[in-house]
Length: 281
Image 1 (tube, helix red, strand yellow):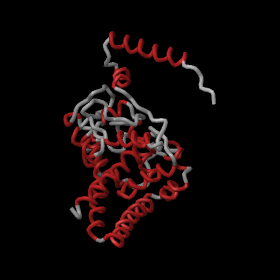
Image 2 (cartoon, helix red, strand yellow; image 1 turned 180 degrees about the vertical axis):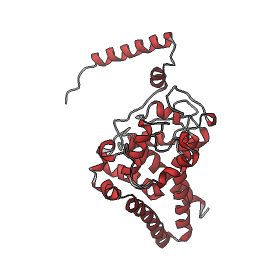
Image 3 (cartoon, helix red, strand yellow; image 1 turned 60 degrees about the vertical axis):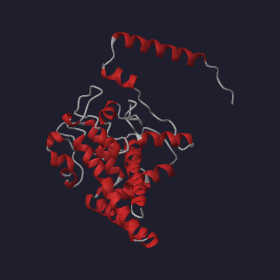
Image 4 (tube, helix red, strand yellow; image 1 turned 90 degrees about the vertical axis):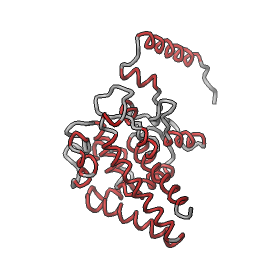
């Protein structure tokens, strides 16, 4: 228990740092929150050896823009090794991947700009690696070697989440598709369990800007539940949420009758909103 409890705590914190912080917040801006909350989650991801936030978000945005094409930074179509770890060995950014144009909202942030180290690939990765190790040394000094080891192994385990997901969730035979998208993304239940809901990858590719990826009742999405908790605490707002109806409409999976009912429902909502009296400050 001395090892297991801190391992679980650090695993959950670092995993949510990647899924809530790096992915749904700064990569897709699927919700808004105070800056200190943003930094809290991004720090959790950074200390899991994830590298510069600007680099991570820029690569991920390029992945969505060029999903499963030759320009995709990590598609299994370009080779399993390349999709898993090969893309990490590339020095700098490819010509079609540019943070100055694809991550304008991040490059002006002083903290993220510092961690990016002016785009110098070796320096930025060395800083991320050194910071992650220094964090464990601090834990060792404060709480002992067992807690430090638990934290280190949790961080390394979380590091595997996006690397594994890049491969497994883009091989059609390993999962299922709920929505018709042009790429190979699929939902894989066991990846979702390990990755705090990120394994519902086909759902995510059907609506990348949604803070919610677990759509069906059995699609457990811990990251989404965390965002809802933040909303309840007043720490998150302007949350984008895609429903099954939204995704089915986009994918063209609705029958004519359901499409007619959906339009009628939308018309009623619009009419009700139009009649809603204005609040006086």
